[in-house]
Image (cartoon, rainbow, N blue to C red; front, side, top):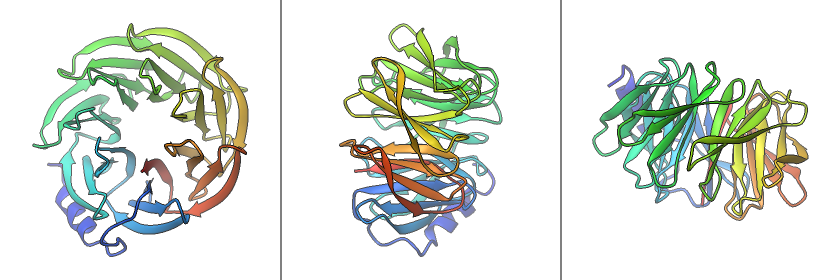
Length: 319
């Protein structure tokens, strides 16, 4: 286990800001500098709990049943395991050096993380806490996604400008796909057929066919200077929302035509993004504003800004 992991657990268990049980729905916000997670009640727009979780929390992912949230703790080399009902971190799992983003297998048994500093992607057994494999990938891996059948994992590499396709069972690299410059995120469409990869420096999105791992095309985001980062698809798959850190905005993409149809101004350096299951509300983590922007998707206007912890990074909506 990485140094400091046991102290992380103690810190989380001593957190006093969390209620005995949090109502749903909830919005989890990882605060990278504050070393906390803000738990927001979307119905009131208020922070109902602040969870101490460890050093540099970034990517988060839910268990399939929604009872557990996993958070990557980059400077603790661990994944924090949060009980949603208790609003408390109950344990940590060793995750290899510098985990950044995390996804969960469809059966909930395995976590997959991008280990940025060591250029690896790792698989962690949830039940035992054992690292099943740690595979070398491109330089500075960040984005990570898993197919709906749980058989393949996609990992972006910021410096190598590629995506590694891994066998989820063995960690074997199946293919390397060239994409745009400085790829940040890989997001699977709701039907599971495509993987969208945002390129921050390239200012574009590369679309990969999941069945063949071939590139279907690439399209620009406006003037290609907006620094696209993370993606949220509407439940029907018709629209995609993409945060644009440098521009302080969100682009609205028509998925069928691969064109930007609108732009929404939000806070400074929007990074994480989350959408309600009915698609009516969109949230962005505005890292330099220390707020979460709440967007009415019908009017495409910001209706509220919720103060959270320092440097919000990722968002997770829990129905």
